[in-house]
Amino acid sequence: MFELYGVGKDGMVYHSPPPRRKEVDILSETCLQLSSPEFMRKLPNGDALHHIKDTGVSTSFNKAKEPSRESRGSAVRRWMVMTGFFFLGCALVAGVGLPLALELRSSHLLEARLQVVRRMLSEIPLIDGHNDFAWNLRKHRGSTKLDNFPFDEDLSRNSSWGPQWQTDLIRLEQGIVGAQFWSAYVPCEAQFLDAVQLTLEQIDIVRRLTSRYPKRVRLVKTSSELENAHRDGVIASLVGIEGGHSIGTSMAVLRSFHRLGARYMTLTHKCNTPWADSCSVDDPNSETPSDFHSDGLSPFGKMVVRELNRLGMLVDLSHVSVRTMKDALAVTKAPVIFSHSAAKALCNSSSNVPDDVLRNLSLNGGLVMVSFDSAHLSCSDKASMYDIIAHINHIRRIAGVNHVGLGAGYDGILRPPTELPDVSGYPLLLAELTRDRRWSATDIKKLVGGNLLRVLKEVEDHAATLLHQFPSEEWISQELIEDSAYCRYHDT
Picture 1 (tube, one colour):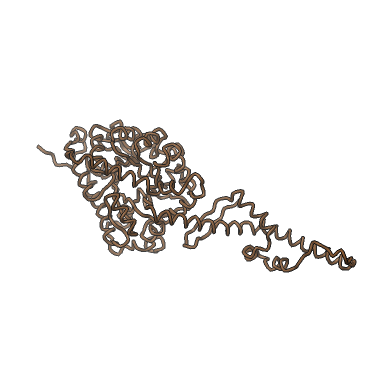
Picture 2 (cartoon, rainbow, N blue to C red; picture 1 turned 90 degrees about the vertical axis):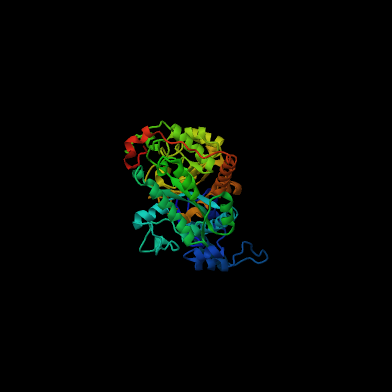
């Protein structure tokens, strides 16, 4: 069989999968309908076939007049010539015409599906759970400066920046992104050093970015503000803290991040904190140093989860150990998320979610926002759009359609799916889902943003019931961090 690549009307490169049985039937249809003007234009020898069309052929004879031998011979010759052209046409269809006809059909159907997707995304915002642009800026530019940084251009086509940039305003709008969680990520190596300061600077990047383009992006802190931004046609921007090491074992720092707009915190990145175990403890090949072991969540870690509930911040369980997942699900009174993970049953990565946790997640009300990282999708250096769909469908089958979303991780993944190299590709993914009869428009709306909006509202509603509670004033046991306290002021 064969696969097709083409360009849609909006300039997006698309890829058509191997044709289905109905599409292969175009061969017989075309052989029987060689007069199709559209097909004639696509055939290399269309003129000859047009000649056939113009040549009238009668299959009945005038019984009143017996044809002469000469006329009978002429008729036989015409039949032979026409039969030859017929089989030539069929051969062209099989060798050249079928791929072209399928390409034509595929492009028409793709455009129709994209129109459906655009209509759906005008009604519900596409909310992506994770984007590492802020850290990419610091890493590749060597600073957090936005001055003279062309975020309103397609950076992949800018010779000064290049294809390593997967996010900018142009491609966000091409991807019809309605809301983006921007990750305030800092490396694990900053733990007990300047992690808090670096996190503040990363949040500041997001806030400055939104204020720089107020007509196109807007910082939001609540579900209603997110919906209003979508209604106004601007991209809602939210902040997520990626890694509990960012709070420096301080509830006060956590609350300060919340005031600055942070609306989720990933309990760990790929390193343990003094109060939570990361996925590194589940990975026998991990070389990440493990200075702390809590066997899931420590008592202080459980208090962090309760404080997140009180604040109305999402508990994010991407990158944590399986034991930490289960402890957090047992403690939280509000739905949780995995901001950028996938199904462990399909790719045995320690960053992915096992099926028993997926079943518990359906009881909790939370969701897994599927990562587009090839390492999470195929456990290799290469993945396709169909790997994403396989993970989405697996999570749907185990946890339910109300518990799956999208969390690509662009600008933090080196190997995105070949068809979806950047943030512009979401419509193509959704157009492919519309081919699956299991996915109704209502289901797709849940996947792209409806589920996350529901979770946000439930977390906010739960926090509203805790307004009478005082902030947590608990301190982590100093014995746990005394060996790492070289960068701390010691109270007497």
